[in-house]
Amino acid sequence: MKAALATLVWLGLFSLGHTQTDNDASVWTKQSVSQYGVTWTFSQSVQVGRFITGDWWVVGPVTVASVSPAPTAERHGSAVNPPAGDKQGYDSRIAHFDASLRATFPRTLKPGESLVSVASVDKVGDRTPDTVDGQYCRGPLRTAAVLTCLSEPPAKDAFRPAYVGTWREMFTASQLRRDLLSALDAPDAVPDVRQYERYLERIWLDHQRQWVNRMMHPLENMPDYGREITNIVSNVALMLLLDDPNGRMETLLLRYVQKGIDYYGVVQSDDNLWIANGGHNSGRKWPILFAGLMLGHEGMKNVDATFQEDQQTYHGKGFRGQNALWTIAPNNANARHEEADPSAWETFGDNKGNNGIKAEGYRKLNGPTWVGQALAARLTGMVGYWSHPAYFDYVDRWWQEEQKANDFVTSMWKAYGEKAD
Image (cartoon, rainbow, N blue to C red; front, side, top):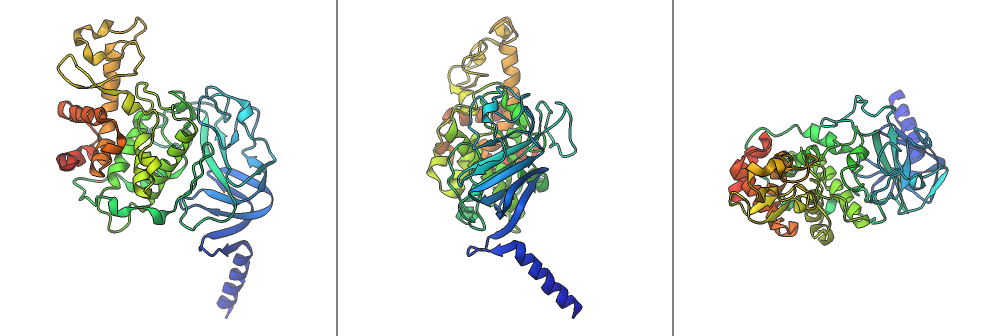
């Protein structure tokens, strides 16, 4: 009897703060919500809930009274619908700081607006306990989180709309074309799924032009350098194509598609961010194409923007007779070094160290990370949508000459590379 009474009391208390909408989405009435150490406090209790990937939404208009950590003049910044481009307002230690982009509080959010809030570290170079593997700690941000304002509770399986700019198309997990996943047998040991879930758990704050974007990448959200980002993208791209009868990859799938939605939102704001530059800016294209495939979204499948992989590969005449070539950056002094005699690489370029030897080093840095995403595009029939044949021809050449990728990608290429396309 006491147990039954306790249950009834608990259910009564539960119902005071929680309701079910017609679409069965959980809706809570709260005056504040927190995620990853960032807390948003409202002027009054409001309806809130979580998207399928865990980020908070709030029914608005709503007044955000304060954010914690409390913003200072140049730290712990927030931005509403932050634009992609050169400037940012999160922290003055990141390049191109613009205080005019910072939100101040109290701030009223309207439906269709996203509030991105960051928590800064005291000293650049500090590593927190939750810093992800592959972070070189070059930036000042510990973490970033996003609060999305909606006009009504979303479907229970809704993805969060993109956090950058103003493109706010919404999607649900029920739209996913899981039938297009290959269900391949794993040829070798599969990477730790939980590790990659963690890599994709938080937003990838990645909407700044050129290499300085690595300073924006929060320590606890994502690696800072493109090589590590692309390794994650390539590994997950192939993990999601494995046979998964027990649904072990479901969380990974949802979070990967969310990354594609976010990156597509970024290029709707500015389509010229990920300019070829050494090893910084790869790995942003495939998540968009994959999300387009899974959601049947023609805009994503036909995304038109600047991507490093496309700027760094071209058809030409290499010194050794190669016809699919790599270049460090189209306008660099040491561009097109593969067309020159390797014996002249030391003096090919300028007198500031931008020579053929440096370019070749970056070619070998990028090559291993590209193999997985290229194979995934082939296995899913997305080569035509990628729309840059030189990239795939170059990856074929890379594999023929070097046969270098991480162990998982290598095993997948050996098992399925010849069967792709």
